Length: 447
Image (tube, rainbow, N blue to C red; front, side, top):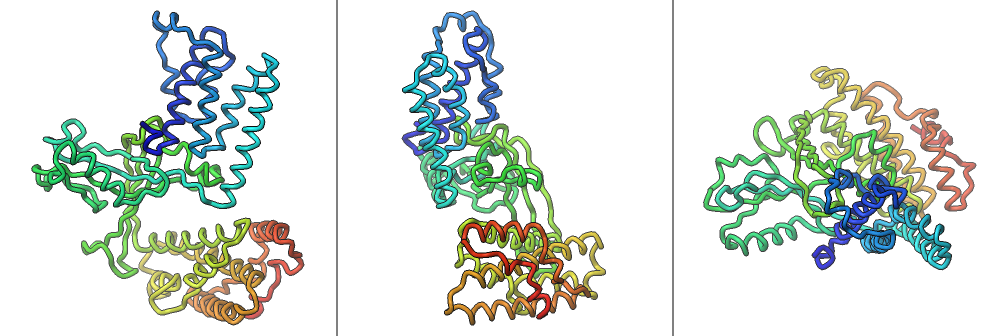
């Protein structure tokens, strides 16, 4: 049913699991050089199959190399349909030795043609950014008389492409409505912890929350590509604003944020669309942490836009505009005024204050690169607009420098390795010369 519903990744994983089982079987009978472990790179879920029991019945099954080959070819086909081109090579590594041993050169040309196609596809989707590998939701069920042993259980659901919250909610209402009657099913939109005792037992309640894959800083350095951040993932995150006064939203000085990290018992993609959550961790961010987090996000967005092979100028300008806004209570400066002013900073732990300052330094640096880049990309008609951005940026740097009593943008900050590397790559791509490098002390001199 997976293919019918457009769940191609799940269908592909079914093939991978079956192929791994057959490989393990042949491996134990010394008929194939690799068992389950060869599939580990494709999915860590394969460990389940390695625990296969050696029962008497197993020995009567007539699995053969031929059966395995057919399954492996199905895996390639399935992974292609799932657009998970990056792991096709792992399957091919198992197919190639068989064809080499049999001198099946025609078949080998096909395997390598497929591999060539897969790598071409990878380049294409990295360029167009049009590949969508799924959207994730936390779904929790409440109502003993309806859900029985599912009552109170929480899952992560993987939905195809860009599924919206309303779409999955409707799907679940329809699905469980057929079982319990639509009028008896209620969706809980709020992401807060549900107190089951407060719910009306006459209804089947389903809580649906949009979540994103979660990675700590170490994982982010290891998982470099968009694909790696959507494949073999088992941790998810969502955030909810709150204040100590009980209201959700408050002013900057009172705005807190609760970050919930959920861990599933298996990794996505899996043979199923939903996986139970087996661990939950909550982190409460105080207002100064929220500020640091916000500046960190903005910095990362700018860095991502600047280091992209083909810079999206419209996005870059939109982000820059938001970043260098100097209005009284908007933009990044509002955080500096709230937490770094002499009168305020003493209220907070010095470690937190320094973290925020440090994040601001990185942020200013990212803005400075983005401005340099924008200047290179614009046409005549945008010079005035760019000058406006630049003058806002200067005002922001000046005010920030006054607040924290240090000259923020010095010449030497222009020489960070991140800058020059990105810049040389950018020059290589765009064919511009890099003689007016980021080392140019123009901004520093003007501020």
